[in-house]
Image (cartoon, rainbow, N blue to C red; front, top):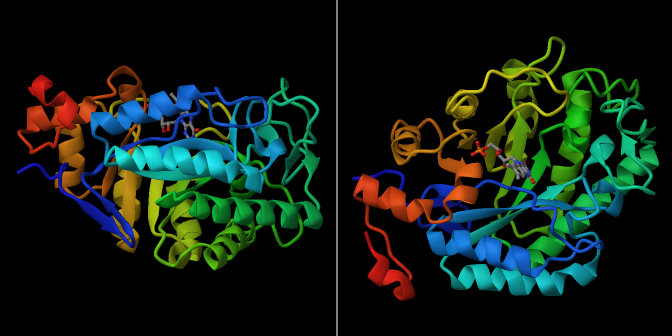
Length: 339
Ligand SMILES: Cc1cc2nc3c(=O)[nH]c(=O)nc-3n(C[C@H](O)[C@H](O)[C@H](O)COP(=O)(O)O)c2cc1C
């Protein structure tokens, strides 16, 4: 019996299988962050293909929190109506959907925005030197995340994922390489985690208590003096009561050479899961049904997140069910295409 096709329950989130679409920016929103036909077709295809969960791409909680001018946004109430129709459509395809709430921080490439970061350290020489955030800026961004979470819940999303990875704003606070603050938001691990903890605390006040919170972390910066798995464990220890599942990615703070190989990040998901007895998601170069089955079967993670393979093969779960001899409910319209 395939374990990959076993259902999964986390608070109010009930998934038909353990396969999720990893968040992937499409840079295809309108210039003011609105969803387009591209998103409708792109996400619906993966829902029809059978993933249990879609994690919608990084969606900016502030205009200056976009990576590019064509990122999706959720920075005011006017976004809710279009997003709720979109969510309804994904639900009608028997699939659940989470939204990844994000702020690019110093990695914002949008011109004419005031670029902010914990410290005035540019990401690379191609990027502007960001403005060091004042306490007021910090409060504004915490409110922006909180309001965005509230809107996501109103729009009907099944879960929220906070993007605390890949060198974007929250990760910039977490890593000692990008956070040189000398106030209560910098210095030791507790201080560098304060921004994230305050965001989570506020979000929990505005979303239903049974709505799960995912957090995507970069478990290692792969650089001496940066985050490593030990400090990531210390960070998660501080926020563990405020989150439901850890999505374990890595890198992105700077551009070190990373040794890439199939499943190179699975060890992070496994370590965090075992250490805290918390749910985790594994991601990164997971491409075959056998590999995905091994991860779930050996309880190395609770969910398998697929990125680029789903860009090539939107119907990967149908194929995986065939290979693993698992039951798979085809959409009625596609029954004649059954393997
Ligand atoms: C086109 C593209 C866009 C991405 N955008 C995001 C994003 O919005 N948020 C995020 O956390 N990761 C993003 N990622 C990283 C993926 O979610 C995933 O972690 C990574 O591609 C590794 O998984 P894979 O080997 O299955 O592709 C993106 C990756 C790709 C290829």
